[in-house]
Amino acid sequence: MGKNMLQKLNRLRGTIRDRVTRLNKAAESYEPPATPEESEIILNQKLQNVLELKAQMKKLLADYLDLPESINLEEPLEVIYTMEEEIEDLQVKFKILLTKYCKAPNADNVPMTVHKPNLKIPDLPLPEFTGKYEEYESFKTQFMSIIGNNQSLNDNQKCCYLKASLKGDAKLIESTQDTFQSLLSALDARYQNKRAVIDTLIKNVLSVGKANDSPRQLRNLVDIIKRNLRALENLKLSRNNLSDALLIHILEGKIDSESQKLFQMENKSSEILSLDCFLNFIEDRARILEGISKNCTTT
Image (cartoon, rainbow, N blue to C red; front, side, top):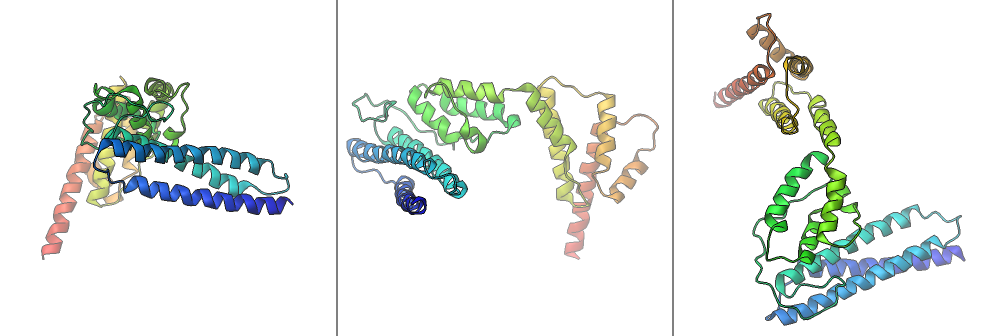
């Protein structure tokens, strides 16, 4: 009995999957009709279909969980959770299309007559945030500049854009209300964590990969170190002689033996060296190696 029910639920899941795929194609390839009114009718119907799928998925999940404990549900549940995320994406996509081509949807996604704002969709692509602590402040600054401070967008529209910008772990965050400010506050509470950001930046510096005598790898090492140290300085953590000495000792072990030898030969002084001195040497070394490589290619 349990196996028959499992097969039935799997077939229903496949049917829902097909509908999700078709709706996703409709959203991706949407071409607006002649008038905003027609667009509103079409898109609201699509949005209603998405809401129906959400309800079906909720019931399907409950039916799976009612199956006997002897049935392994690991694979079906993983698929369902993935499909739920895809349906959430669809809801956001159709809300954005409604915002772009007709009147804004209300909070319950029900068609209503409202004054159409004179809004201009930004030409710039929306910034994306995947949940990396060290990238949150940059993301928030860009998003607020493009969307958050745009007076022609209402709260519901801003919320839709913010949801569309969140990827990966950031997409899973929950807010107390389905509003722009509530979601932004939830993101602030999670990712404006100074200690977590500092830990991540320090880890980025200490775990930088080894660089051989490749100009590209050497420059990449310098870029990673400079970018993360600059971010630490913005958080009011300044370098000193001790930190420079420790970093030089660590980073020397990240470069090839020939570069290590040349660095020691160029810096014979017994004085404590600055990190800038080491990074400048690496940049010069990359430039020299690049020149040698070009000369070898032309001869």
